[in-house]
Image (cartoon, rainbow, N blue to C red):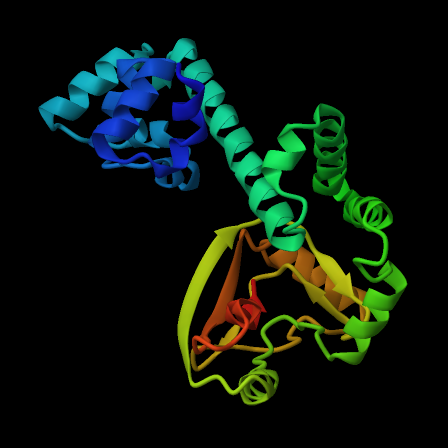
Length: 284
């Protein structure tokens, strides 16, 4: 497989995308993707359980043919995915996620440190190895260490972590679950003289867990109840252990995080950094 094709995997669509998949894991995976109209890489990553359709009852001939090639039917009528296909899919997803992480790293470093271009990093293997290692530490929870590493190697270019924390605490940047931040948005728009913006809403899968927010004395991670369609702020707030136990016993942990965002549109004479999105509200 051409390395250039692999690096450009996220720009491929339709026949180019299917040709790329065929070269990696074969035609069978391609047929399953085509049947579900998964036509580009990001769609595959967002809907990675492509074998779930085989649990459906469907008499369409093309579906039955694909299922026959992809599954083994047990005596009780159940279908199980052939292990080779499972391995192929896992290999494909691992490769694509590695490429996705690489692209994120490239864009984040180039955006944050324009003088430290990725071409420059590639020409210095030791520097590249160090950055990749610290990037991995950041992914595993060591983001502060990653920042300190970059700051110490670029003297006078970045503020200290202590200064950042102080600045953030003074800026009222704390986001509470289900809280609308219209006042902060209005201030942001007024301060930068912004006239237009795009609004959007999205949801993403998250690891199910409950966290305690000491600043609001509330528990985050349960599905937020609605009041006439509006999420209730700090609903899971209590000093009672019995009530907390009741929530754990009677409520599922949320598997989705919902976000409302605004993307300001700056005028041509404004700095491009002003176009970064503004989070209005987050809730489970």
